[in-house]
Length: 75
Image (tube, rainbow, N blue to C red):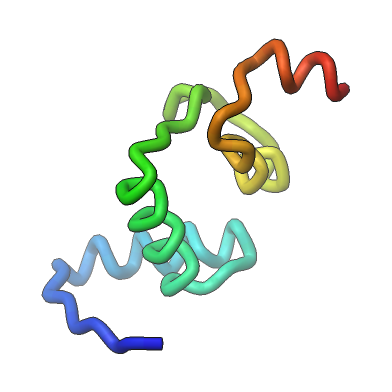
């Protein structure tokens, strides 16, 4: 695995650490997941202002090509 140096404002680092702690993942995992989403061009169908439980937030969008009907069928 490669190492990457980023220059990020302190307040964003604090925010990222807080978010990572809330999700019970590392900041590296958050960044990796973000880059993967950029790479695949996938976007979560859940709007950012929707309040979801932490576990649901982690799972939202985990099936890149699934639509809401697929989720409903599964449930």
